[in-house]
Image 1: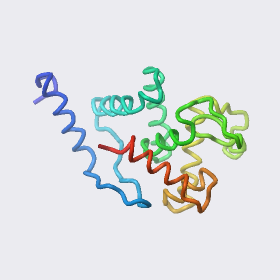
Image 2: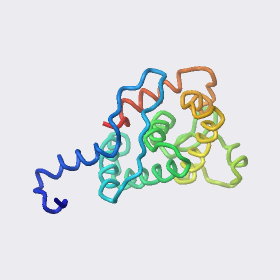
Image 3: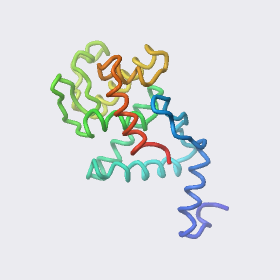
Length: 187
């Protein structure tokens, strides 16, 4: 039965069932375990719109502007998938790093949503890049996170510690995991 044929009251339940079938059922991850594996690739535009609506609702308390929220989610998704990362992990990192403030500056000098240190511009071949520009910051932040994942053989906990500069200390990766499971976990 096509989507148009379903009565309005049944669309939400059919949608939830369809989206639930896209990803395998996920059990709660152990404290230091790995984030559940599932691909956020969508089979069609309808599933993509469902994901955007769901993520936008979760982000509404942190980013009041609906237009900025949707654009940000699309940019996060694009940058994350381009580097082979899960968009939900990137969203958790952004929440911990800058609380979704694109103009955030850390006491150490890190800039933007993903708190990219200025020295990375030179290392990534873009010495004049504006780190307060959302797409540039996301692209560089995701590339840096991918770099650390490759360096630590795919171990997300170690990669997150290296991304933050807290090598060997669990406080930053634990915060990202807590935020991921509290707000961004696939339900």
